[in-house]
Image (cartoon, rainbow, N blue to C red; front, side, top):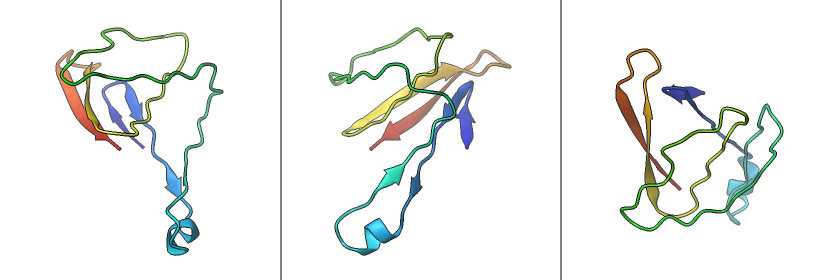
Length: 87
């Protein structure tokens, strides 16, 4: 696990036999907290979404197509930091 500011980058595991059999792959994420809401978002190119956070629950993002720049602030310095995320 690594972090981007206060954002935990949630990494998956992959069952290698699902790759070796030639059909594709199965990736698994095991959240520590229960998922209480699920949303599907479409982002238009070059548009900004967000500019807020939800302190009452953990928010997960799964990028299935394209890429996005995740932007947050370093909790210690307040400096803006970012990470490119893609499928």
